[in-house]
Image (spheres, rainbow, N blue to C red):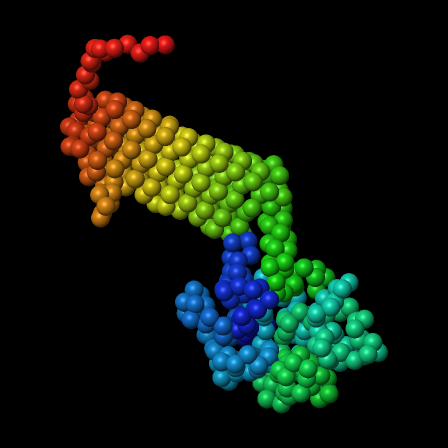
Length: 456
């Protein structure tokens, strides 16, 4: 295989998205479009990786900053040919094949690109373009072939000649081009066309006219090479990719009760014999172990879940760690930096934030646990609240092994409850409780005899 450089075109704003956010940062199955294209490029092991940026370049650079990426700026949006030419200085001493990718084609697979590269090299081509066929090609540049099927040129729709509108084969914007031909050809481009832009497609006709070998490699799945231009395209791409993701998990031994309503991001991992009920969202870098059960309406984001875990209906979990044989919910909320140790239980309408819940500990009802560390086999009664915020700072609470906390208790942090202590129901605890002690704090109950009975 020849040396490979990859140029990713990512400079356009994407005005048809009608968004304040640049198009390439819109996510498909949980990952920004540019992120998907970068993953694809890296999977090919390129010698150089260049990203051409323009709109919101500072945001794009900050989000994707990495040592293996060389960013170049396209100051003016003068067309795809101009964008590739902008990358020229970054590849001035490069000799090999230049692969040109578009950041707004997030469904493209490594297999299709590898086939393009293989076809390019085995055919000893100077230029190869990835094409596909559409029943309704309106809006796309058409691929014009000669009588023997050879590639002659690519014509943008606004510049089509009479009869060329019927051509179904379209340009995907993905190219393999020898570097020694590419950049000299770009310098000779003209903007004498309907859009007054420098078209990258014009290098195809230049290659043909100079007797260079130019070829088209057909992608059979047109959805895979679909460019995202509008919110309709974005929704279609999301739907297509989520279907593929669902199919992959089911083939690997996961049960999806209703695959059409399982919203699973591309980086999610799920163990075999796990069951996912309808209307669940598994997002980000979430991983679920084996034999888990996720009931309807749950949302789990960037969370690591062990084996034999049950997450009951309508629970929300973010950036947490859940160990084996834990039960969560229904209607539980685990906020970031929550750790549930093996066999613990977080029940209905319980909220946990930045806390560690020890092995076998449980908080079954209507409770808030924030900035707390709970030991093993702690029992937290219904209505317990940890008062961790004094209006300026958050304060920690430590509850040691075996503590029993009665219902409707307030623990005012910072505070420590010693091992095997008991807190009486209805208490407000503001001081440290020693181990093996009973603590309670209540106002004295007072009775007054009624002077006048209410009349019916």
